[in-house]
Length: 183
Image (cartoon, rainbow, N blue to C red; front, side, top):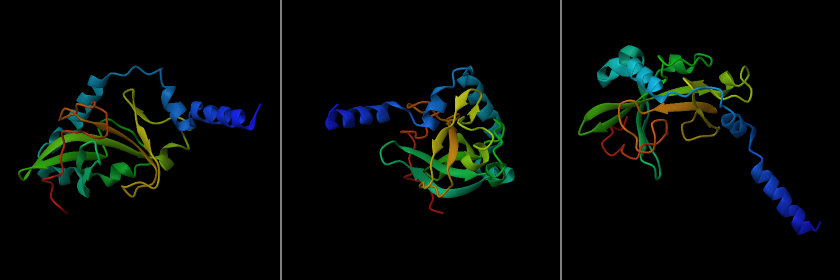
């Protein structure tokens, strides 16, 4: 085998062998996914906060300002419940760590919820297995990241606003940060 052939073979092998986390996310066929159940659970959990003025009553407070993507729309303004974020990896459909609001013409509209688990809380007890909620897998965001968090897993549920890219996709192309307040 020539050096060139060996280099090509090793490069192809590297590209075809998925990273352990990606492999763990692909091997999740034993759970029945029912998107409607998770959407309903997210709505039930967040219904009291349809009015942004009620968010503080649930210990949700704005963080980060409005989060927009470079090409894929935005997430909106996150209202985070720090107690849920720092609960040592507990995943419950009735306790989303964040509420997402879009601001237009001075009015906040609840669009989605986000479930967040810090990797350092999840990974020791669940090696090679990402969190899932009602069968829907969380995505992994490594450190460093634009949010200033340690590595984490997250799951967005666009329970209150349609996302043409998908109900569980992070970015919504119909959400804008143009009218969001600057905190």
